[in-house]
Image 1 (cartoon, one colour):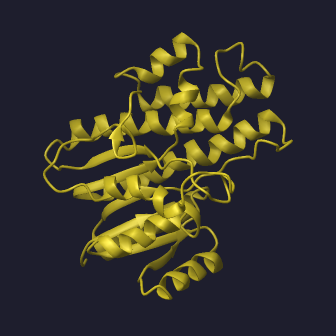
Image 2 (cartoon, helix red, strand yellow):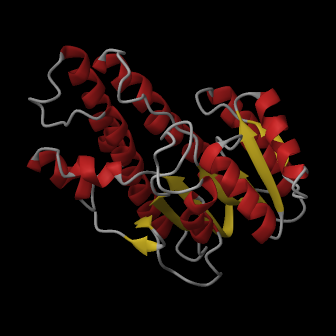
Length: 275
């Protein structure tokens, strides 16, 4: 049980890799680059080593519950917990993808919401006093929220929405999408947007729970938008480099000790955004 540790999910490329790079330079402790694919993950660690930066690889497939619990047990055993968790892993279908909407809805939410929730369920109890949790969400989330029915908007913005209610709403979107009834039910045409709306709402729910259950531990949990970043996911037209996209997530991960805000917020360009 030695020293401090930061864990970044889905970090063998893109924004995740840029976050690991920045933490290697700025965080006093061990930085773990995690990925589903061992070969790609180790290659990414080697690419950082060629820049003179030391990251450590650990396999983590967020869609595999056994992989999550194995990783969580490793960090508990070796470090007694986790100081920084940045959940970056996620997927998006391209705009031109012809995969049926119902399939896109299920696959996107399975990774971006349900698997993310599994990671948080197993890692949140490991977050040490003064720890930081950052969920990489998207500006598409609030944009999608504003396109939902008034009734759905009210629930997503409510201070008393529970995790169980949120899970039921996310499942409802998938079920309605499969029947082609999502529009009538008040949902917009964006599985990615709904998944990130769910992740941001989950972040707010979990932050409220932390404040209630661990009021003196100083743990801060936020969701953020890295911006529109040139990655395999967003394409070459995007305005920011991955290193620029890493700025806000790393800022939230390295918020100084003893401060109490932001917590349970959606943050973009280091600023709390309306929800």
